[in-house]
Length: 313
Image 1 (cartoon, rainbow, N blue to C red):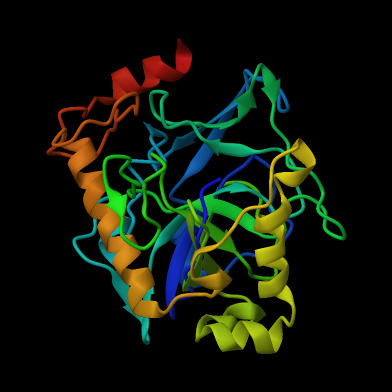
Image 2 (image 1 turned 90 degrees about the vertical axis):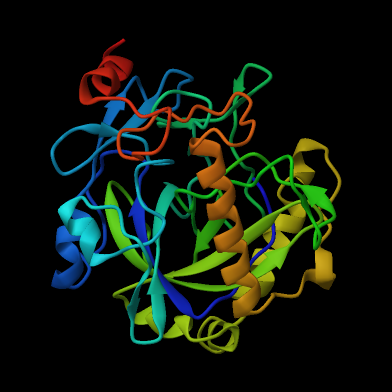
């Protein structure tokens, strides 16, 4: 996990992904249903095993990378498989995509495999053991739908002036705090709220589009009003979640305060810029695998056959 939170008044669209399971919640409004059908997933291996992988496919059934091929910005052009040139807005909100790696109330630490071809979702392994987060009383597992913004990258060569440390080499994190548990290959509209910053992490808060809690998307005070105690529980969770493993409590920058909209927009834009440099090989990505099927100016671009062979190998 990475860290800080950002509370922003704008929308995200999320590709929720953990296993090919039927969603337990009603579908979003019809105008987003088509986007929801744009992506599907395919499981390889058994869940709760080191071999398990969840691969993504586009609307044509072709394998893609959720890290590099799902656009950061949602756009009507995306519906025609044309990468959007700028973000789409609904009212005063901007639409973004999100890949949900871990559904709320689950414990398995699932993540985008950034160092593997096509970057499937897998369960993290440490010292030969599958990783699970402990239950932080009185909660069960992750207390939000947890994931990342595609086409963003926390550059480990760039020192963040607010955190006074370098990026963690992953996409930027998002905690989706809406009312639904997200399962399966969903695309969900989101609003991003101001971030919370730890000493070493930066994380955004997002609200699922098309549900009653969408009212939380206007500002951080709406979250305090409609979900009293949730922000405090979020801070406590990140402060304590490593303690059961024998590690010290996490500390937060800015005394654990949530930052504003402009700060959040800046975080998203800068990490998207770093990602562009990564896939265009203008910076050293180390072991990060940038194989993709849609970034035309990327030297890591591959064809449909190459992508298929990755999954079938």
